[in-house]
Image (cartoon, rainbow, N blue to C red; front, side):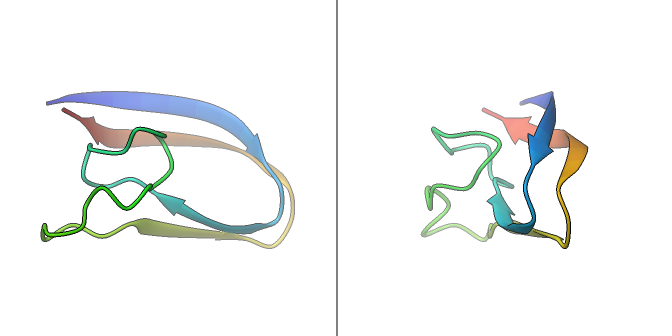
Length: 59
């Protein structure tokens, strides 16, 4: 497994991020973790922000 880093601008809202490395829509969760012990990482933003998302697994 290798790690990925994403620097993205996000609007206010709730985001579900991949924690299993199986998503076809990384860095976002697409439900590919079903049947595993993984679940999405939930990110809640109250205002638009530029964020750096790192340490996401990649198969």
